[in-house]
Amino acid sequence: MNHKYKHQGKSKPGEKLSRRKFLKTTAAVSALATLGGCGILKGEFFQKHFKTLTKADIKRIIQRLESEYERTYGKKFTVSAREPLTGTEFGYALDISRCIGCRRCVYACVAENNQSRHPQVHWIQVLEMEDEKGIDFIHSNLYYDHKEVPHEGHFYLPVSCQQCKNPPCVKACPVQATWQEPDGIVVVDYDWCIGCRCCMAACPYGARHFNWGKPKIPAEEINPNTHFLGNRPRNKGVVEKCTFCIQLVRDGRYPKCVEVCPVGARKFGNLLDPDSEIRYILKNKRVLVLKEDLNTQPKFFYFFAT
Amino acid sequence: MLKFFIRWVILTLGLAVMLDFPFAFSNNRVSDQEKKVQISSQKRGNDIQVPLPPFSEGIFPCSECHGEMETNPQRRELDAHEDIVLKHDEQNRWCLDCHDAKNRDMLHLADGRLVDFKESYILCGQCHGPKLRDWRKGVHGRRTGFWNGQKKYLLCAHCHNPHAPRFKKMKPEPAPEKPGGSR
Image 1: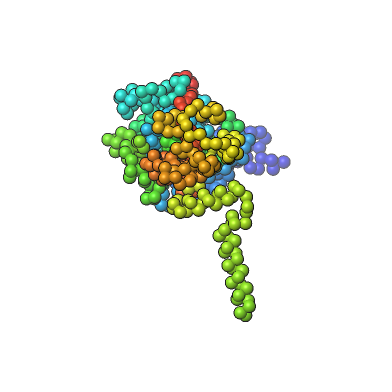
Image 2: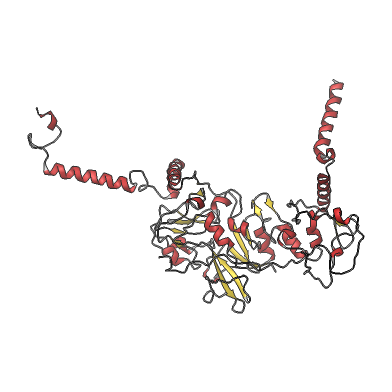
């Protein structure tokens, strides 16, 4: 008669369900439901820091991400985790004498790198400066709105991540969610970032941006060609930044901003290759870096070709 | 055995000739031109690949109209080409300083050597030497393609109108939202 109660421990035969048993089961079930709902059981919660993941881990995570993105945006996604090419250290140069402040680079970057349209995130900020004041951040204007550019008596200074060789943001991160790759690109592990924004406070160039809300990107505008440490869709509460288009440059391509600049002011290449465009600029042109006195050692150079 | 050897030599030589002169077998006018350009490029020691020149529709070859016409080198108001407003050292320059009067489909350098439109950068570089030097290195002008491989170049004329080379002003993309506006 009692075989039903065989596994019920101390509960007495005849008693349907003890109070202790009921509470235990309820707690366990609700905990499981919560964990499952948060994706903990799917492995997201226990996902390790990117640098400690094995190749198999990365493959598994990428498969999960790809199917997740495909479900959200209705498009086939590729999330690459392509490693740095050996013998490369990327450098960038921008010709201040050519930039006309048209902001084509800003929006090409937004589209290529899946930045949130609302709330708005722009990795490139084009500052308008007065000829007479020279490079003067305090009096620069990010929100200029002229009918036509370049505006008389002004010049333009686009600022994005300077990919410092001595990056203060990396030192500021309390959980090491941001670091410099061997090819010089400073990247963020979006799954490891805790959103404390210490890196944003540490960056002297205002080049890091926080996702204050869940990023909104229309499905038809999403770029499905992504990199794990670059332009894959992000979540609310993480910091993001320019990666020199890591998804393109590790395939040998130019960053998007270089390709769209209508005046050809943007130059990119391998600092370790003596025949590269970037080395020619460093050797032959008048070059400057921003806030040199801070010893951040940017790999983003500004130059004057004329 | 000797027969085989001779046949092998003939075949190999034939193949080499075919591979070396792919244009030798085409009578097509365009590929003949391409051949000329390639040969002259090799002579000057550069292998820059550029897209076709940005001609207005129906304008090329020039000889189609000018072939029969008598050449008038006088500076004057033109009856045709109303769209061209010369704003490129216009005090000192006129059509035939760059366009060739005899060979209408070519340009010419200061020393009279003919230059194809596809190599017009050589012509521009006569005055704009440092720009040409930077352009060859990939520092002047827009590059697309691969930073460690094949780069796509553009001719000077793709960005600068040769008759009025200064860039026109353009409308900027919208300014970013001010903080607080989005929340």
